Image 1 (cartoon, rainbow, N blue to C red):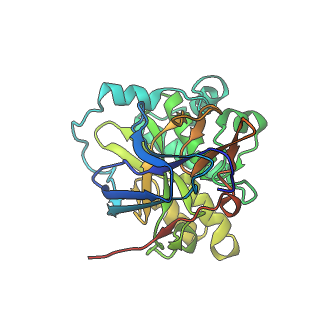
Image 2: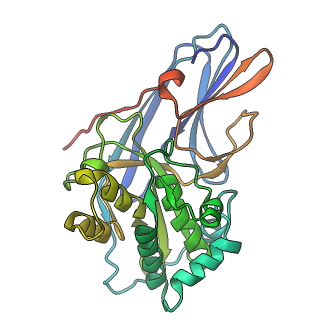
Image 3: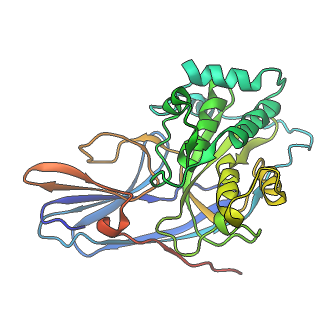
Length: 318
């Protein structure tokens, strides 16, 4: 950080431990100041909090080892008797500041799912609608804002993963299907032939939000309609929905994820410890605050050149 006054830094630390991801170890060191890892009380999001005085060099380095494996759910198989924990269900149905579940969001979801008899059919209808009616907007900064009400009211359905997958989650929640965003970062190249769906080495700008929907009898089902729109925009100079590569991605990304990606958390409306500027919509990027002349100012988390942060990945197979 370029700061002569006190500074605070908050870094997302992965806490998602599931059958497709295991967090093995996280270590950190600072050049000065003090740091600790805490968890958000509501979602369990891991947050490294580092605080520096004006005399400290505000530098922190974090290393995380994570094990992942590809994930898929066969929705043609016979359903099981798995049930979602009531508290987890309530959280996955609740509105958030950027994901309301009433008004135009509910109206839109009801129109999309009209005639669908099961949650599987409704989830598929919502997925297809996102794929067919939204677009990836390369001009949007970062992964987008995720203000789904504004998207629908303005009929501007362009955005990035933090917008398009958030729209899917909000629409699903509004019609009673538990759903959640999963915030993370791409950590390796895709093995499936999609250059746009992977990143290795320098992954400083490779953040990516995915989505899950809970379907009774099948558990949490991975989806990623935003990445279908990414394939449309970025593969081969731009492809139509009818292209074989898009068709394959569209089929695959309703029910499976290639795990060349690491999940951080599911958190919304995150109040970073000690942050004087209020909650943030989601926590997928490094955040920082500096105090100059007694006034707190948040550093632009989407500007790694001036914020001066770098994220790198190294794949270890075996």
